[in-house]
Length: 216
Image (cartoon, rainbow, N blue to C red; front, side, top):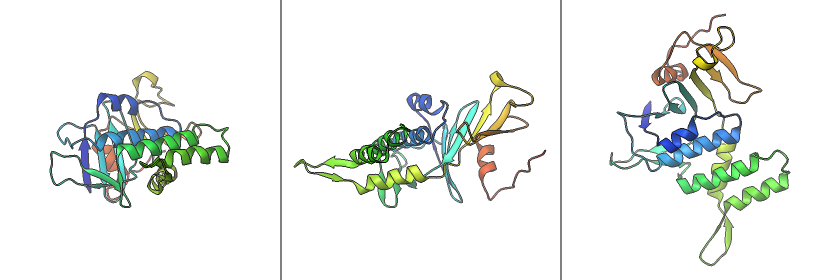
């Protein structure tokens, strides 16, 4: 398994570790993180983001009391120069901050308003794909559409670890627990016997390692 480790900026950290309840909110977090990483160099000695590529593809966001992990939707091309950022791509399409910004805007505009009909949705999405050349002729970028489709159709695989003394309850809210799923209608907790680190969470999710058995 290939591991890539990064340090988040304070700006990104403040955006990542806030409650997430919808798919569009989760997509924004993934896009924000990857957009920053396209300019970042790996930092294996001081990190709070881990991307794991192997039997599974996941990105982990790590803090002292909270961690969460989701599916990582792109591939990484490692830079030959360790002082330069790695590059991200999807089926040969380069993934950069501009691409992510347009794709993210299309997703948020399309999914953020439940009252929007299919035609309004299509108009808002197409407007985010449209670019102008020097002659003013507008064309639709198929690459942006492919990225948007990947983000909208991905299986998120959301899992969050919390050490949460403020809301502790011996029966319904264990001090250390895993939150499975993110939407209020689907989420549930699995209690843990103690605090864990990102390496433990990665091990829990790795299908090649020992499977954990849940008690009654």
